[in-house]
Image (cartoon, rainbow over all chains, first blue to last red; front, side, top):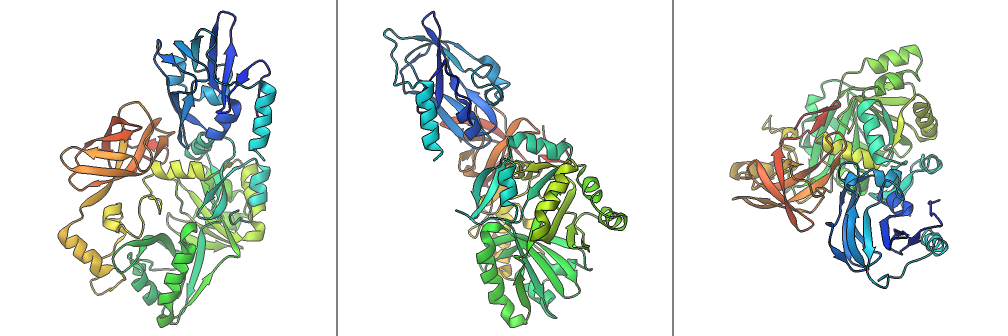
Length: 131
Length: 363
């Protein structure tokens, strides 16, 4: 069963969001997503300073199987990206909610959120997908 | 739901992620495709390859039949226990399948064909066998395991009684022999040493488990694909099919045009193609730029020569770079660009294999 930390928010495209007290958020892909993709061998991240709108394709994750877009789960400006993924993309497989984080975003005023899911709602979505 | 091998339940117990391959429900990986790949390069891995078709051809004129059926010459199989790789062609020189043929006895041969081509192959083989009066029997009673890697042979031999172990270890590359209930062949599809073992399907799960207990990592089709790509071995359906001939598939070495008296199916077409020269060739590519992974169907731009297409591509765990096979114009030089998700990335044209016996051959 996939690991779905209770304190995070999720999207139906299998990204996670960790809101931080300073109005920023960390973003990555979920344990379910990394498992479905298989071994990840290349990650392409947006430049720092780029403004993202929730729902737009903002990163690419290539696994041994395929290339997949990652969609911005929130709107805002990219203030950091996980450069370690350039040489060690497997961190996403090994620790998707920790060392495998992808972006840090300063949230647009008002949050600018796409529809995010609670951990319970995301678990519910996964159980339906596996039916 | 696809067809299942005798090991289906075992794969499921071992946590395999399944994939459809040629109509068969097969393990893609058991956790990490890259770890499985590396296990075969560094130690040993075991693959269920029971989806492949095993066809026995028997009869006084079986050699004459196969001399007509195959583009490589079974006359090279001078004694029982020898194996030969080659193509079965249609009249236009297109590749119906690539296969291994073993000489079992003086007038008995065994052909191993691709899973997705079993029906097409059998229809073609049976259609041509009739006039030679030979029997054609599909051995659905057999399973096949591939044990591959530098430690694969020693590890397999440990499961055998001493005289059988000795016989197995004495096999030279591309040789095979019956050992007890098994038919053991020193062949494979990974670029490593190892065995392929054909055995009664009922014993296959026990052998798989014994090999695992002896230290072979269970490996799925994902690792099998990256291993064969590194080893420079074609995959039917990706790198060649009925619309392509052996010369434009880097398989010219498997076509025996001598002796000229052997009138195999497709020969006339191949002779004509050889006279006018092939317009395309199959080459290896090594991605130079960072920025993605080479994948099947991406467009290759060959400066001054035209365009081609990647037929198989992926990430090479051994080289830690992306590699591919591509069918490109014959005049393609040593540098090309590949359209990877809208960006032109530079790649170098190289001659496969990329890796053999654990060692990188390109840099």
